[in-house]
View 1 (tube, rainbow, N blue to C red):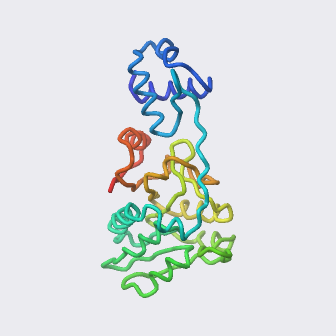
View 2 (view 1 turned 120 degrees about the vertical axis):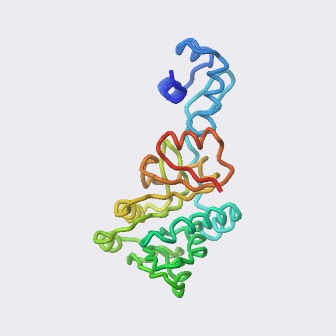
View 3 (view 1 turned 180 degrees about the vertical axis):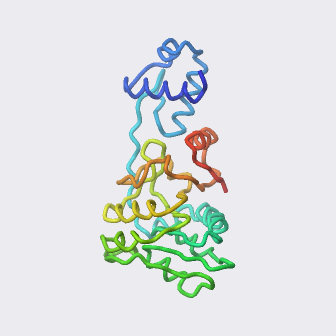
Length: 254
């Protein structure tokens, strides 16, 4: 049995049983105990199970707290800065991109200096303001209502506007990202707008520092396998990186 298939079988067994010993797994799958322990370790690193004394149990991702824009802006700033610089480098020649509202996407905007015309669609007041006088950048705002205490627009006006638009790349930040829950966010009122952003884009790029693999946001924007590219930092484990790549996601580590 191939390693990926074996790990999936182990995950299925643990999920159905809620708890199972390593010995029982080895016996059921006719594999060595050391192989079981290695697979359990990798599944735990991927955030899919929890290893316990003598076995494993199912995991429920912790719901990330909404710490607010000001707090998120200073958290893991060095990692976000590297991610943003690489992202800006990759999308500068795309023609038309989407940057959804967020602290890491704002960093992308700060690093965008395209040599030819780049159209940037955004629901973020902050991103629009950052790019307002940037050479070769045309800012297109989605429109909608401005939520009190935030800098992003929402409501059906933005979705209606995007129906006639097309973008090469949608760059979207995340509160959480995992194979189980996909790309997750906190803002319920912006969910339909962000889904529309993904729908009109040829390529979906998730930018998330490695802390985002350990928690979930309140709502799922899309499953993980819809994401084409994930840009993250060196904190990602080799096994989790491989699992994302096995699911068809191109992972770029900076």
